[in-house]
Length: 380
Ligand SMILES: Nc1ncnc2c1ncn2[C@@H]1O[C@H](COP(=O)(O)OP(=O)(O)O)[C@@H](O)[C@H]1O
Ligand SMILES: [Mg+2]
Image (cartoon, rainbow, N blue to C red; front, side, top):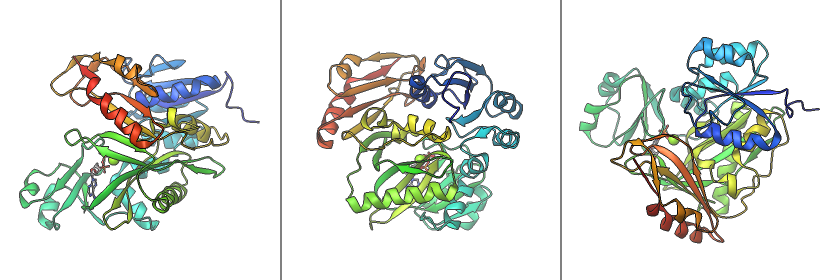
């Protein structure tokens, strides 16, 4: 009998941001009682869990103390204290994703080395101690510098196109990888349970905001051939299996202009590229994550309808207490779904929410989403 459903069971989550909020929404129908740890009592999920603990998920002792009160412990953000998680695992707490896997993924250098060791395709790279070492080596252009840790949403990634770009390298230990001639950026979310059952979602296509470097627009299913889609799913499955990870793994990939798939990076948690699964798939990525870490049967990943997801970003030039304009346009559009994360302050390009638009065809969903995009404004 699985003991995880019921009021005496304690599921802990490090982080109470928007991904934590959507995890809490998925947990609610099963009467799962969540405990969340986040430094900010204003965090999006802070009021949606049974127990909110204010504290720093990067601090060893804080994570240790918090984790001891949990039967299963998971994350909604990668930048957590993995040493404390290793200790908790040794003490018998079920920590998913496993701390050993998290430590590899937290460091983009170790992550790339892992992909190479496991013969998983990724662009060629070299590790460096810092910008001086990169300048001394002067790798051929174009290439991409990435900081090994702490990068997200494009912070920590620098395209190097011309010799002058070596003058403005990012500080700290880094890797430099070959620039890929990208045809399409794809993501596939895979789930794996402790027993080794694996399921993957349809590949989605991601377009990035040119300035903010955030996923701005996501289309499901990706406009690629059925063979390429199968190949992408198989690659995601092989990747989660290679890590032996329990939980979700979002696998970001490049389909290059020669038709090859290369893994860009992976994230061991629910992911921005899976928000649409809430309304567009039989099982949302959030419920799938819970199923995986609680050792419950994995759910059907099928897409019910073509979908577009748009991030709702803070408008450029506005900072302060947030005001949403044009919500009524989204709500009066059929099969359009609005998620506002509840962040009280907006900043330029801050992720404040998202909307998912379903269509009878992907073209219809894209047209509806494009029409809505300029009508919803996030101001201060
Ligand atoms: N090797 C590469 N070649 C071309 N573009 C790249 C490469 N690596 C990253 N990019 C671009 O930069 C974006 C962010 O890089 P990524 O490694 O995914 O960092 P982040 O952690 O910020 O998501 C990618 O989605 C892609 O658009
Ligand atoms: Mg990325």
